[in-house]
Image 1 (tube, helix red, strand yellow):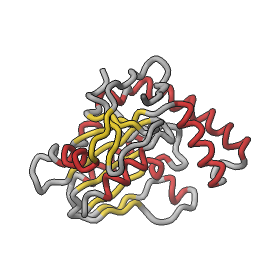
Image 2 (cartoon, rainbow, N blue to C red):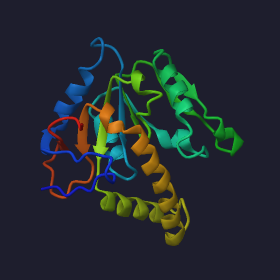
Image 3 (tube, rainbow, N blue to C red):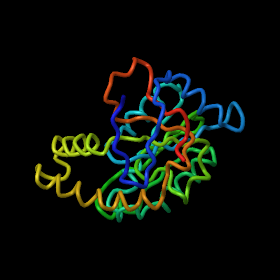
Length: 223
């Protein structure tokens, strides 16, 4: 029995968790393309440190010509959850099928060089991050996954990750940042209810072993 504390009272608790082969999940996602040779664009959304990037990497590794886009690159030095217009612009470029080079405006303003770059001819692009499946961009995806996670497990994982990286300072500073971020994230997700736009629910913080090559998925989408 996997123990899950959902996002307060607004996020329904998924039921019927069972291991499914990752290959089956990839096949299900790729089948949402309008034609067999079309790009498959997939959103992987969920709370912070809930397992989104791990799942996105597994999905991309299963398809030869694939890439992962991280919303953190768009959110860098932007207001909390005030960057959906940037994701909209990026995904519309992706949908043209042409090579993409997109530089978020905050990058040059704050001394970050380079750009988000994607070649043409990809089979799968996975967009992962809190807000990946924002209402503004939901229609641009072929499929969407909600990663449900246990709140306490995600918090512990996120704080330890931040402390290890030093990105947000020492432990006290990392905890303070996490608490501030969490307030904005909870309000955002409570408003967005992204799970309602997700065809697949995956467990990001399993409390029991998962068979190799499998992910834990719910029996059906959340209500």
